[in-house]
Every structure is written in structure tokens, then in C-alpha cells.
Length: 154
Image (cartoon, rainbow, N blue to C red):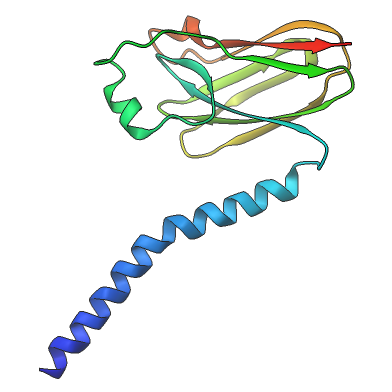
């Protein structure tokens, strides 16, 4: 009988560790990102998805799996900042390896944005105007949707 109790306790402990691990990793990730981001920066989270393009925030796993079943309207993101703002783009991928380029500010990510491995882009919006960012890695049949706009106001 004691072996059954010990086995049950060990089993519960393993289940607890396995269930708590993603929360611990997420908390650690937030802690590390917060150390890297300047306090006064304008922060934008963008997720790349082959069919949806760049979208604000994250894409749930359910949306990744059902995207072909439920057609959604494509709306490229528009980021508005002021001249002189420090801008931080936290880029993630929900499906395949994506690239990123914002050529007017000399930003190119050629090594790829891999699913589950976010990358951060930081720059000073020192030019006024409308600028386009895009995926610079052929990522699928809807690659042409992988773009967005940054508007820098005076």
C-alpha cells in the first residue's frame, strides 16, 4: 500500500512539473524581454503567419490549424509613431520561418524568425513618412500578404 502512495505522489509531482514548466518559461521570457526593452520605447508585437500575413499580437494554435477552414479578411498592420520615438518590434512566427525587412531604416533579418523564437528589432523613427516592412524570405503561397506599414508623424 505504501508503494502505491509513493507512486501516486511521484506521479502527481511529475504532472505538476510538466504543467508548470510552460508558465515558468513564459515568466522567464517576459523577464528577459523586459530587461532588453528601453523604458520609453513604443512596443509592438507582430506575428507572422503564411496566410494571414503580419498581424498584431499572437495567433492562437486553433487559428493556425483552422485557417484554411475559416477564410478571414487580410488586413495588413499599420503602426503609427512620432518622429524621434524609439520603436521596438517583437517579431514571432506562428507557422514557418519568416524574414523581416524595413529597408528605409536599414533593418534586415536574414537568418529568419523561427516559430517559438521571437526576435526583437529596435530603431529610432528619425524620418517622417510612410514606410513598408515585409517578409524577406519566401514563406509560402501567400507570401505577398507578408507586409505592413509604419507611419512616422512629425
